[in-house]
Length: 249
Ligand SMILES: Nc1ncnc2c1ncn2[C@@H]1O[C@H](COP(=O)(O)OP(=O)(O)OP(=O)(O)O)[C@@H](O)[C@H]1O
Ligand SMILES: [Mg+2]
Image 1 (tube, rainbow, N blue to C red):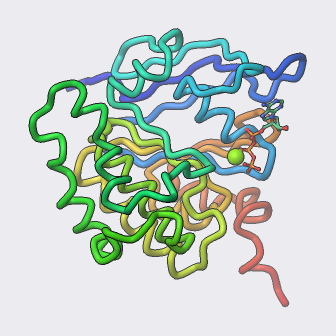
Image 2 (image 1 turned 90 degrees about the vertical axis):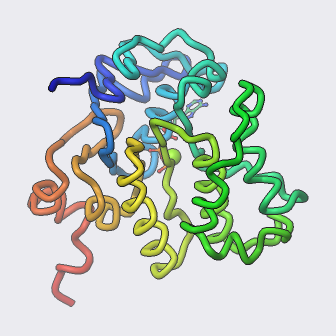
């Protein structure tokens, strides 16, 4: 059976004033897939995610086609995209620092509550299962969490909204290798819930390891793409993004 992909982006261009930060981007994310976009600082990774979410700053202007579950959504405001099941965990995690872990999670279900869903908190147990540390710290103020725990909370809060498309902007940013491993393991496990994940990362190795498909974004252009396992073997990717470990010392 052929079904339309969860996300299908084509000819997407974004400019900030006169500067075009993203040129003619085309990406696709299928149901239950993890797709990653890797690339260096300033390549346009956050720009791509923000454009898909409708969360560009006022100075940003996107053109092109963004289809979600087969429907063009490029003109919808961010709230309508959220209401349809799209969720972005932005680079700045935007937690409510003085509120507890649990209250932050409950807020993640706010849209479902407002939509009149009776069991809007039904994901809480699942989130606590995925992140036992958040359960232990449910009464702790979010602002006092470690960087890794904050990242877990940001992802957990996104899951409370039961998204169909989860977009993560550099979940490994600033985290120690062990925590990165833990978080990527959890993202990988989410596949079983059927959620489609678009993952933006500079940590190419970790991202490609858990992804089905990958894209390389360089100064606004999608320079390379392919199944994640093939990209990880690509000499250019190895040289530029995975190289360190393979270089002789
Ligand atoms: N609001 C803005 N106004 C003008 N230029 C912007 C704006 N936001 C981003 N840019 C520019 O667009 C380009 C892409 O930025 P973007 O934040 O998308 O990169 P990135 O790949 O996410 O980088 P990083 O890995 O550092 O987060 C950069 O050259 C940046 O300076
Ligand atoms: Mg970024």
